[in-house]
Length: 338
Image (cartoon, rainbow, N blue to C red; front, side, top):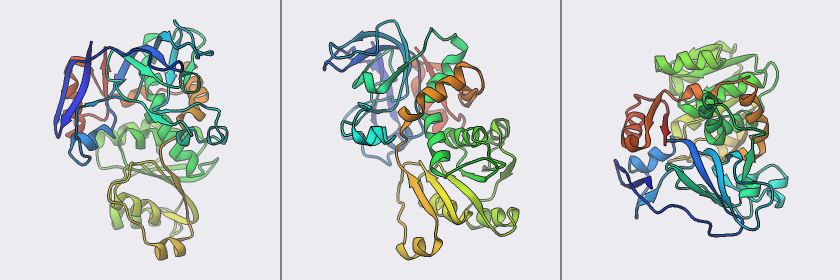
């Protein structure tokens, strides 16, 4: 079968790969209905992360189960399923506490930019729908498996609640999902920090009440001006750079909360600064499995449409264009059809 393989900086190919097989009794094999390129895939594509050997790409997925291992009890062939990019048993103490992304058996999904994929820890990772969803819901269900789940975690970690003032730092797919999530959680004011018209428009559609185009100290000053010098109750950091992290911390009010989900690159924080800021930080890889049932229900009942974040749809064979378009910011997120 064809699959996506990254060889080095800017070198991603769709080529023949080995079809996945059951390797452990807890595995499942699924036929993907769609896959996509993630913003985190671009770190290796851009050479920020070392690639020492060819990498099978893809960790966002949904589709139909075709085979399960002998130990799998809750998932059956023929079911439509959505899973998290973090694979978990959903039974260990960390999973039971709601942090499946720190599961004692944690693995990270790979090889999902292909027609078929192996999903380890299938019982703990996959959630099945009651019936086969309609095709128009596939993009939104795919979004649930990572980008929406991550945006939701950012909002949850930042303590977004009814009536709160929220700032979202980052206008990529995760930031836009953070806007949608904050809206669902009842935020009274959602300020999206973005310089790009198409992303600003989508942020407004997802529920943003204000757009701030300034960045860094200028962006912080604008937020303070808009909040009468107070700052935001909750800030979602959805980029992962030192500048964006400091922008997020400085936009929050004393006692405010920052949910950070951008994979950190070059982020170093000073202890004295943190001590006197008096703000809470919680982040890391999103425990998407905690949110899967609720988010899937919101999609299946058509209360939300996160699939709108996919503004480029291409066949798997053209995956290199999907990466390039996102790298050049010509696309927010690329959807791959098998």
